[in-house]
Length: 231
Image (cartoon, rainbow, N blue to C red; front, side, top):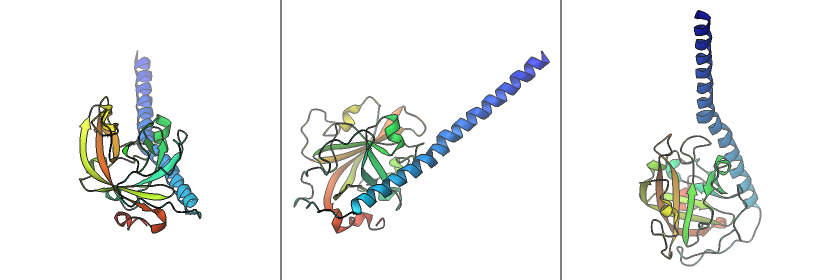
């Protein structure tokens, strides 16, 4: 009996250690590896975009609809834009990849399939982790009305301004409708919606931020004023 109890105790200790190692891997190591990979993707995109290419003029009305820089939906998992959020820090720059599957969100911020592309009328809907895998939306709840959310593509800077926040059920998919929270309504403006699990370390709800397009500028003109510190 004593031997059985001793063996059981050793097994429980081993199991506890394995659980702790798994938690450390999930919460720390995935941040390290995904963070490095995402930073490398950002650097690759910036290098690719820095190559000489004709600039695409921005529309006279900065809030007018524009033709997307990408002619069609990128292949799933491909990075096609970079997200900058000054509220998250001057060094914050995360790739936006097509798709919101588990593997896609390891590579950066996911673009919901079928939603608008940057600058288009409709709703550019994005998903990101608050913990693990680089945790790009870790500080989403810190965003305030009026904060800038900037999307960079090969040719343009799109500056959105935060308009509202809400906490919803994961089943409330109307938050990513072309007009947020108004399914079936025809859009006339360009929105950006960011979604992340809520509360922290839980998938019970979603924290959602909506932002409205304020301006569109050519990349050749340099970053918008809200990103002056980013460069």
